[in-house]
Image 1 (cartoon, rainbow, N blue to C red):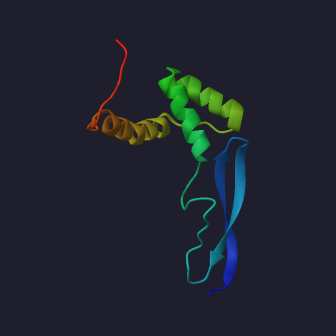
Image 2: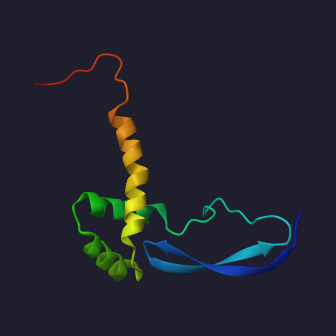
Length: 107
């Protein structure tokens, strides 16, 4: 068991815009919640929307403008690049997976 020692404020980008969170400080233990991951700055739905815009061919500048209009905060090109690198590894892994069994196709 632990005791509280105040809180600190942290921002989180959501589909509804920026949300200011008050995260409790504990004296001896780190505060963790299952709702919001530790160090997470954006909802996963925001990340997905950013990737969809990028894969649809929307320019980085346009993505910045769209995020500013929708969520009130600009997303940097490096953020989109980092997301793309995380996902591209999973995509390559999926593309190169071994296919076993019988697969029916129409030519």
